[in-house]
Image (cartoon, rainbow, N blue to C red; front, side, top):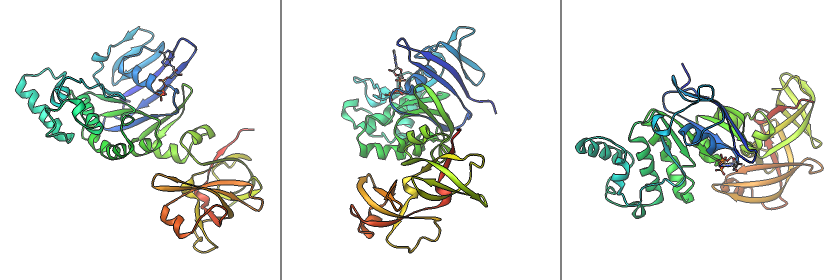
Length: 366
Ligand SMILES: Nc1ncnc2c1ncn2[C@@H]1O[C@H](COP(=O)(O)OP(=O)(O)OP(=O)(O)O)[C@@H](O)[C@H]1O
């Protein structure tokens, strides 16, 4: 299948900042590509270049067989010729127009047909009953749904979303995040979405592009990027709690014994040629118990002391010092009920357990 979007360009800003984009969006059906990375890494620049609002200096942007931008032939189609829908952080609804008028804006159809389509979109986006209200008379989540409906009503071939949930409070953000994939999937078009929110990326993305300082560090299916980052920088950006340098002490039967800060851990050996590795352990893969019971499926059992306890949304984050000299710091993410059952407090002694298959190793070139 030909790539729907083929994007290879560089944007140079005055002041020396360079942003490069290098990715394909392989599907013409519904799929969400998330541009993910810290503030200032270049996500919005890429999205605006796709929309035609920014002109890159070099490279090309191709959508199906159409060239949207090409350095060699000086082609740079304006936004209205690219047939994309976009929706930015502040929604930019017209304040003096009703919900219906906002959605129908840009539909060049006779009145009856336009009203019929607007009615369908009001229903699809759960806005029926609000059609005559002005934007300031509806909630932030409803405004967001109006903006999405307006972006999709003209049946674009691609939808671009810049931090679509960032203007909402956290309760509404959680609610809309759950609805969003379902709402968007009805339209069977690819979506490119910008976010720096991990939860949003995990729950919405099919493909993920991790960026830092204007460059792509990793691009792939979202599950791969979060579980198998290709370097310590990506591991840090996607929020893996423990990233330590370790040394492989021995290898046997596909397993490697790795020493980190004087503590030995057994991991599946995915780096057979390398001696030094970055060891990545997600907080959710460090389980805790009091004593030795219930630990049979985990190959690594470490004596640990609780150093700190912090609630984090629906989970509890626990800082641990592990090993005889308490030299290895790990983070565990557990449920409040598990924390309660274990009667955890600062200084509690626990057993930290990690499956060998949950430890991700990244080779270090010496
Ligand atoms: N018009 C401009 N002139 C000069 N530099 C710019 C301009 N616009 C953006 N930049 C710089 O380019 C870099 C990328 O900006 P961009 O807005 O694309 O990042 P971002 O990842 O979307 O950030 P955020 O998450 O904060 O929105 C930043 O360092 C920014 O300061």
